Image (cartoon, rainbow, N blue to C red; front, side, top):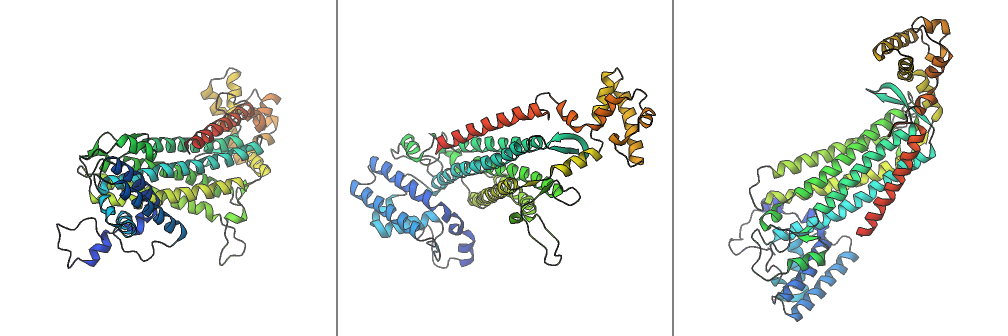
Length: 469
């Protein structure tokens, strides 16, 4: 069965092109959206006088029979040869309910039907990804709660910089995931308008109540412009972008944990459940879960590039190029969703080694900035203090010593005013983090507030997500 044909001689169709153009293998996952939209649309057709009550009841029973069949047969699509899922549904309905199924296309096109089902899918996918983001945030927050005073050597350029609380580090990724969650909320909101009733591009001449259609399908509003809505895929690109940025954040976290779990650092240990070994080297423990997250981030970024390139230069309104949106969106959503789940489990089961973090922080001259700032408080210009401390650090480095190991006479060669107070500043990581009390800083008092605020934010997001279900 085809949804078109009168204009064409169907004998001698090229089988290669038929296979090239089919989308059933991909859009079969929209089956429940298609049945749902059909069920609502038949009520509007009945109200418009297109379907009799008997026909509407018969079609409704046919849809329910199809739903039960699909639900009870996981491999229902195997061996089917339809052009797309919409064609398959109409053909099956004609078998179930008779010729009345041929009235279903009245006042609508596959263009507005596909756009409607893709928006329903995007809304659900955004909600599911948002829930996954919230689980990651919960895992990050849980580790921050469990390690509130552990000090981590903070890095810039992958070089030792300043000490920070490990909880502060975790909350940085919480903030990234929070932005991802908010983007997903916005994606859902912008997908929340109904194309159905726009027809192929110009609207319909039948009295289809689009406001009621929107309400019955759970949309906030009907789309305002029929020409735009049938070919609009902004919501697809936006959701892929949200996925792309989310997995980019995961890729950064993965890279950090790969570095921190390596023997040279040893700050954290990845659970065996999320690691693999080597086929040759018995001692190896590879954090492949993290490497796969990092690799798949590139895949989602590729999907975004492909979706944007597909839209570039398309004339209004619908073009068959838009069939390719499903490849990009489905893969981006699936990949981002699984990456979020794996990352959440890795974080939740992460083993922390505070002593190794502390030792690395002591060895990296991380208090040098505090020492320069202490000199500034004594009246020395910062540029001069920076120079003095820099020379002192070079001396320590050449002597393979830490600031805490300096003798007083050695330090006074570079800082004549050196005393026990400056020695304490130079050697105390705890004092260093405690001084960073500006809003958003790494001081324990600030991080405690950040943890509390993060908990409140997480509860609010969960409440909003629950209210939308």
